[in-house]
Length: 80
Image 1 (cartoon, rainbow, N blue to C red):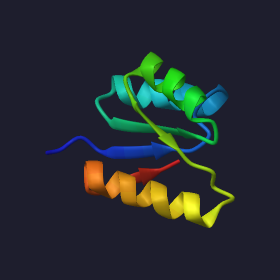
Image 2: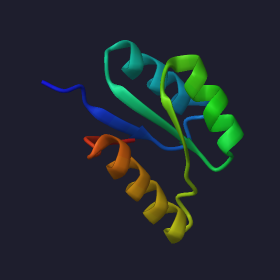
Image 3: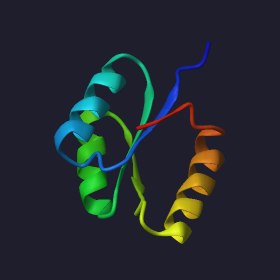
């Protein structure tokens, strides 16, 4: 079975980052998103995840992120 694809919003720090780290160590394919791509990249590099620019208050950002995830992973199994 394929590893689950998990998108964690606001995962550049705090609880989101801790969740990304834990889920990544358990074999999930984790996507770390943040409004600041540089912070998403830094967080993702530290936990073995994929960075994504996403502002959940902006509809265009949400659509672009969903398209990018579908293009790369084909699906989202879990949204945090």
